[in-house]
Amino acid sequence: MIFLIYLLLPISSAILQDLTDIDLQLYAAAKKIELLQEEQSRIQMSQALATSDLAALQVEHDGNKLQLQKRLRTLARLPFGASLTLLSQSHDANDFMFLTRSLRFFANKDRKLHDSFTQSLGELERRQDAVTQEQIRLEMLVRQEQDARFQLASAEQKKQRLVDHASQDRNMSLKVVEEKNSAQNRLLQWLETQSDNQHNNRSFKALRGRHPRPVEAAVRHYFGDYEDKHFATRIAHEGWTFATKFADEVHSIAQGVVVYADWFHGFGQLVLVDHGDNYHSLYAHLAEVAVKTGQSLEKNEVLGRAGDTGSLDGVKLYFEIRHDSLAMDPRDWLTVPRF
Image 1 (cartoon, rainbow, N blue to C red):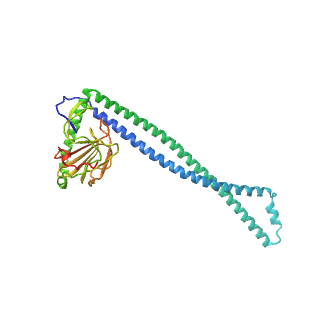
Image 2: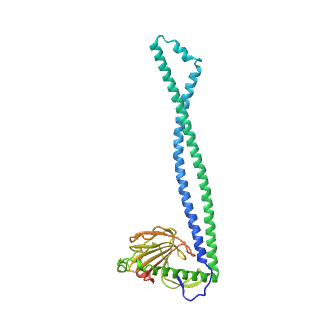
Image 3: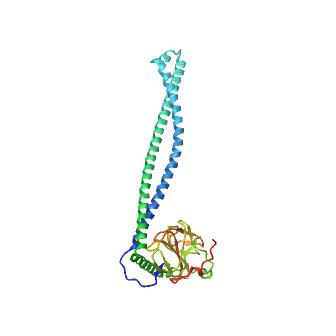
């Protein structure tokens, strides 16, 4: 992505590897927080529904309890052996059978009333226990989110210390640029291995100068040499760096096939798109990757969101166009911005 104009002596440090490790920690912590928040939202919605159900169930249970209390008070007022006394007063067999059926009816009704009370009580206790368990889990998730946020803050501080050190220490700045050179060379070597995977779409060259920009943002650095004030080093820049906001949508500039969508040392989260005839576009430092290797893309399709992975100078989108692995000036290929 960035080349020194002069040759550097070999240096053994691995600053960009440290940066990648920190970015992976940041990414993992942010993802964990996202998942924990989703789970918390699910539990809160479940609790809201459960609370409403509990209120209705409590009303039902209170009604059963009231009926059972009334019935028990009535039975308590009856003398012992009242049923036998009633049966003994029957005048004949038919009268005896009628009284027996009546007593059986009331006994069944009393049993059903008791069963309803018992069932509603059991269901109420079960639901209350479930709500309690969900509340315990919710509190645990909140603690886990707090831990994840602490990890996120620690990783952010670690990254800031690394950035400050790299920008303030001249030797370390030179090491960063050298490591970026090495990362660029590894990427070019990888691209050369992709020549057999090209498809036959030749419309990319035909639309030169009419391809849409990958993101709606101003260009921070254009193609070519510039003085990097952050690292006090003059460097060569083989693409465009856009001054994006975090999570800005990044779009494919043309139809193509994703040949790489993952972390790449020195580039953070990276997407490479093969547009055919050995033309490729590169999108680096993404916060999120929304595509997979082998996936076909249409022009303007979202492939990720801008971020600062692998970056020592904040949120940005680094973009390149290459043909036969050679960098092309995007000014000759992209349209005039709409903003």
